Length: 444
Ligand SMILES: [Cu+2]
Image 1 (cartoon, helix red, strand yellow):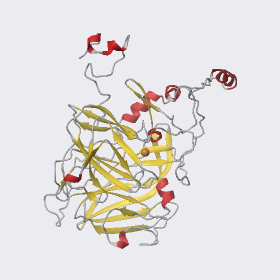
Image 2 (cartoon, protein in one colour):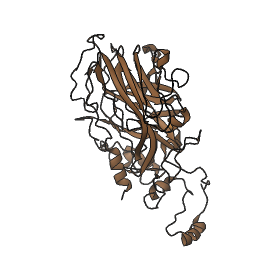
Image 3 (cartoon, helix red, strand yellow):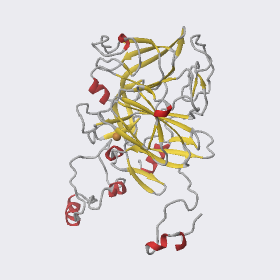
Image 4 (cartoon, helix red, strand yellow):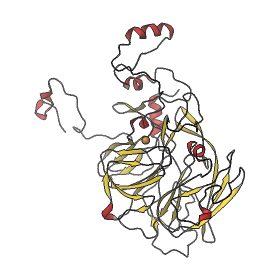
C-alpha cells in the first residue's frame, strides 16, 4: 500500500542519476549519457577547434539522447511512440512521447556540428518533427504538408543540417499538433556554444512545464480540451513524483525552460533571484539581462536563467498559477468557505461511512485526510507531499531546489535541510510581545 510518506520518499529519490559537475569535451560521445564516466572523444570533428567544452545538461526525471559519429555527422535516432509513464506513485498515464518518455530525451550538440536526426514513427497516426527555433534549410523545418510529406506509421525520415547558432531549443510535432502535443510530444534541443563565454555553469537543468486533462479515474489524456486542464507536470512528473534539483552551495546554476502547452507558466524560485540570459531567439547581451524571481514562460517559447545558488536550504520551485501547483481537482466543487457542514456531514455519514465534510475552513483538510479517504483509481490527491514539518499541500508543477554545503555528489537526494538552530520560524507562546528575542526564546 502506498502511504503519503513513502510517496514522498519515492518521489524524492532522484529519477535520474545526476551528473557530476564537469566540463565535457565538446567532441565527446555520451555513450552513457546519465553518468558521463566515459567521456573520451571517439572521433574528432575536424570542423571544430579545441575550445568547445560544456557542462552536460541534466533533464530532471528525463534523459539525454545518445548519438553516434558517422563520417563527422552526429546521428541521433528518435522514435515517436505511445508511452506509459508514472507521473507520481499512484498514477500512470497513457501518453505519447519519444524513445519511451514524455518529454523525449534531450538532444545536446555543439554549434557547428552537422547533425542527422532519424525519426521513426511508432504512433498510430502520421507525424513530423519541427526543430523549434533552429536555423535550417526550409525542407528540414518539419511542417507536415508545407515542407515535407508526413511520416506515416512505421516510416523513418532523416533530417540533416548544420547547427549555426547556440541556445535552448525544442523539438515537437507539426502534424495533428493539438492532439500530439496534448499527449506529451516534446523534447529539448540544446546547442552549446562552440566558444563558451562567461563563468562556467556547474549545474545545467532543463524543464518542460506541461499540462494535461486526465479525467479523474482514467489514464489517457483528453486532447480535445482547450483550456480547462487539470494536471500540471514538470518533465512528465507531478509533485511529489518530481525529482529535486540538487546543487552545491555557490554552484552557478542554469535552468532552461520550454513551453508548448496552451497557456503560460510563471515559474517562481524561492530564496534566490535569477538572471534571464537567453530566449529561443538567442542570448541576451550582458547589459540587457534582468533579474527576476518569477519568469512567465509563454506558449511556444524557451527561456534560460542563470544564478549562483548561494543560500543553503530546501527551496520551492513551482508554477505560480496556484492551481498548476496542485493535482487533479474537480471544477464543480461548491464554495464551502465559512459554511457549517456538521449537520449534513452527520446525515451523509449514515449513508457513506467514514465521510468527512471538508472545505468550511479552506482546502488544507484535503491534504490531511487524503491518506484516509479512498479516492478514485489512478487519481492523485489534489494536495499532497509530506515534509519534515508536516503536509506540504502541493502537487503538479512543484519541486524542491536543494542547496547544500559539503555535498559529495549530485546523485543522491541529500534529504531534508537541517536548519541551523534558531533559523526556523517559531511558535510564540503568550502575548505577541513574547516574540522578541528578549521575550525568552532561545536563539542559536
Ligand atoms: Cu503553470
